[in-house]
Image (cartoon, rainbow, N blue to C red; front, side, top):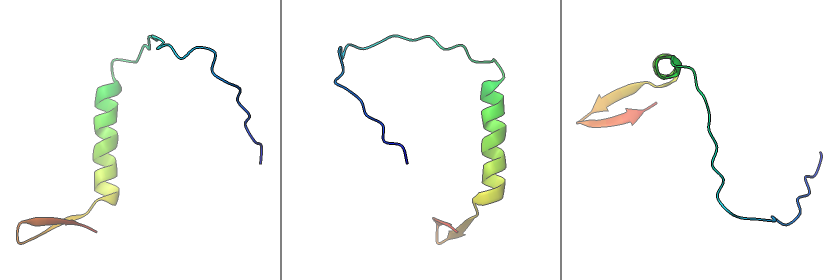
Length: 53
């Protein structure tokens, strides 16, 4: 295993960055969430309290 060695941080000022994302990202993420929910999350109701299986 490789050990990462870092020296002291020269400046700890905040940095501003700009990221460009595709416009279809929100709908793709929503579809991914729906897929994950259908595959891995099973919710059953007992006396009004939800339980994850």
